[in-house]
Length: 458
Image 1 (cartoon, helix red, strand yellow):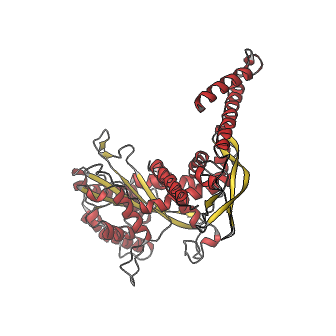
Image 2 (cartoon, one colour):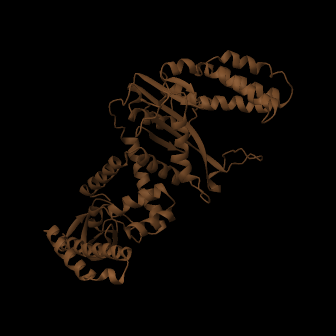
Image 3 (cartoon, rainbow, N blue to C red):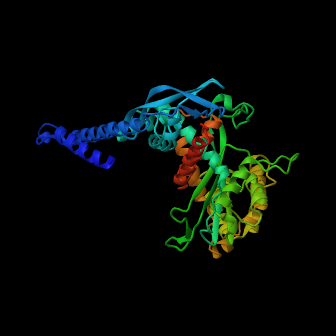
């Protein structure tokens, strides 16, 4: 019935609006935009009438969502809601609970309306744009592309509210599928984002005075690489990458070793979700930082550990510049020789080359010692010739790209300063979107709301 009403009314009103010679007076862009807004406005009015008619006779009482007692009907009160069709004015039944002194409108919960006055469809749109671009830009796109009068603050509140629900869902649901491949890859890394001053207290930084301007977001990335490039090297499979990230500690407390750090729990959830532990070969790639391998030893002790080849080469290039001066032929040749040894898996030759500089006084000796210790401690993770012969990836480009895509593009823009809570809620939302699991999470969030309504909870 609703479909028939809409079809007839839209057709009649648009025909009257357009007329036979509308393009003689207006350009096509003006006409199509006006026609869309007119059609949406008409459908909004029909939907508004249907919703108000359906709730024209409220029940005399309803369960109080605050205390569970009985609230009694007072009157019908109007509320303007922004829907995907435009603004709707709904007249909802208002109830008052004498037991706790709260008033409430059950229809708001039944329709899934939020405190920002957005319908579920618009709330989803606001969450998506808020996780993708700045809140101001998101409001502009909603206005320009969908004709919706949603302001930046509404986008921000909605994105954070949905992000909070996504973060809670992520802890509860570790849906597992069959392993996507015999070889599953994972990587962890971290990158700093600018924070509000009050969020930096008691957090030492790298500034000369020891203060910090950023906090580190740690991310866990999982992917498969059964595809091959032109040279036959493994490359990331399209659509296989998933992310989980937050500002969280990865440090174990020596006094309470039984307590798993928050980021370790996060990484374990993501690996479990992707069925990483069921793969024939579990491979974890990192930049060589000690905290990464400590984490891997605790949550994935059977994984093959690989230091990213690019980072290892970078260490040698930086050492060469200190030993022989930046940009010299000797620097380039020394680094090239060490890179060749590295790719061949000849770590002993690399260590021998560094050993010769360790006794030099000053920065050269100190740098040589640091690099020697780096390669010595990671030597078991650098047999690149063998690893390539086995068909494994030896680079963490997917992880580096994740830092840029998931974190950098949204959280490091000019003028942005974050709170820990605000960043973590948006990180949860953004990761679910970029991991292609937001649709499932959104359906669970809506179902949870429906269950709350069924049991008389807000």
